[in-house]
Length: 106
Ligand code: SF4
Ligand code: SF4
Image (cartoon, rainbow, N blue to C red; front, side, top):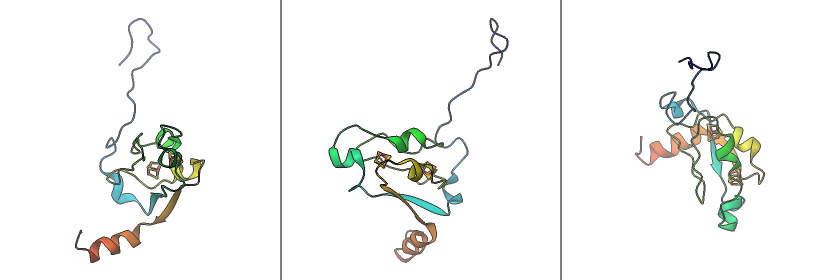
């Protein structure tokens, strides 16, 4: 929608979880946080949250410890790339699917 006073200005909204639907099934690799290397988890302080800041889908919580919403995480790997503590590893999604199948979860 155009702004009356500033016609060149358009409104936009921030991206949020679920804007693209439940995209978790697109994932080939799953980000897994190793809490022993995660700064807020280790220090019990609200610090870092680089993963929360960089996630393009807004699916990482700014909590201690940070949590990833796998319903929507597409597995792009940006969080793992940017994590200063190297706490996030990208693991084969198929290994989790096999584990969940054997547990009768899916
Ligand atoms: S970027 Fe890495 S160290 Fe920082 S909060 Fe996220 S997982 Fe923890
Ligand atoms: S892999 Fe991508 S979508 Fe998933 S939590 Fe990390 S940055 Fe967000």
